[in-house]
Image (cartoon, rainbow over all chains, first blue to last red; front, side):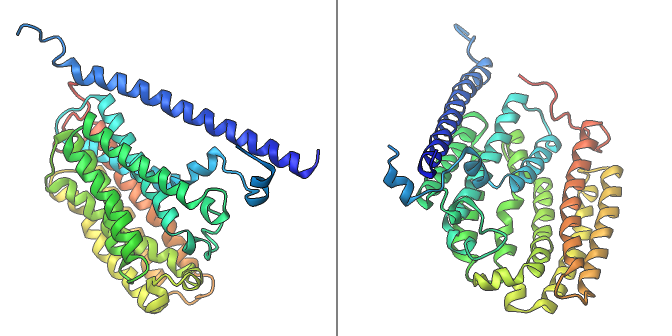
Length: 50
Length: 313
């Protein structure tokens, strides 16, 4: 493996890890927004007809 | 898409760790801790999940400030030994990418705080980010010896943000905690500046030792330490803290003053051993004071006895 191949392998590994981290952050935000919506609604969501 | 040409242009590759480093994780940890103290000592109750989100927003907002600081100050960082290996001056992350990353996190953290916690906490968080980036980084840092004194307000605000997350407002009590961190900042950073003064001089950052000399810096450090000592006892005086906190504040405040006296009498201007000790003790001082506040409140030893995590939901 020459230097350029080595660089490419490092670049692609770093990119994979960045994409994975971004996916985890976005997934975490989805969960966070869902949980927070439930928490914030909890006091009022079941007030139908009152 | 990565091409052979792109490797030739930028052979350094940004890793997840590089982006994490942009957030200044060590600063972030102290900010989380003081923000937690604000949440815990505030009267009233808060849903633990809302408290977690508030702390997350404070952490991400602080990280955003760090990323923006590293982007705007990359020219300075490249000239200083302590900061030359940061991702932007090393070329692993482009300055524009760091700016985009920072502003995204800044806007995101304030928005989430406003939507899910309350507007007062969001406004304070926005103010602290704007102050750190606009007032400290872009304006004061390159212009005045008082840069870290005034700029220190941004780093001092997390207890007030935590308090506002619980109560929706502010009183004198969280401002006392802000005052302590505000007065703590100059002796902490000037201790660092004493043994890094050549770095700051090379980067033309007008830190106090560079502009006014080391003797004046030692004098100012001692003055601030002497003012910080009684300020550290104020939470007890206003009924926010009890005997455990007061004992910690007296003991560690005394230690900090003792080290500041050592700095004032330092004769080894080349290695600055006293300043290095003061830097470490100052971190310990702030950590112990806020830890005492938290422990005292959670153990029910604080005078007001508010159940910060009481009846939630």
